[in-house]
Image 1: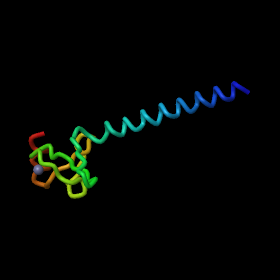
Image 2 (image 1 turned 90 degrees about the vertical axis):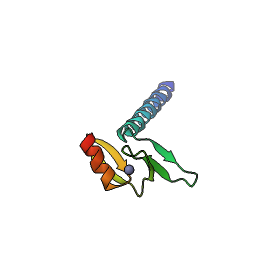
Image 3 (image 1 turned 180 degrees about the vertical axis):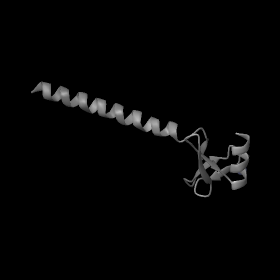
Image 4 (image 1 turned 90 degrees about the horizontal axis):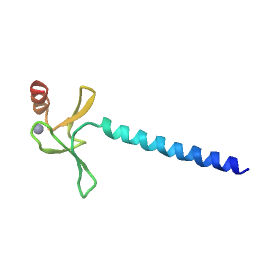
Length: 84
Ligand SMILES: [Zn+2]
């Protein structure tokens, strides 16, 4: 009976490990951009072109080399794509 308990603990342990690894992978996939949260709970993302902070809901999102980027305007997006 004790074996069942040990197997249960081991399974739970690996499950937690797997979940934690999964969430950190999602974090890495979100890109190199800085994200700030305001006091009102709104997420601000840094425009990598002009370095202004824009609300994620208003930012222009695009994928470059498999990474997600957010820009304050289409102009910044195009400028960033040109300069790399
Ligand atoms: Zn910008």
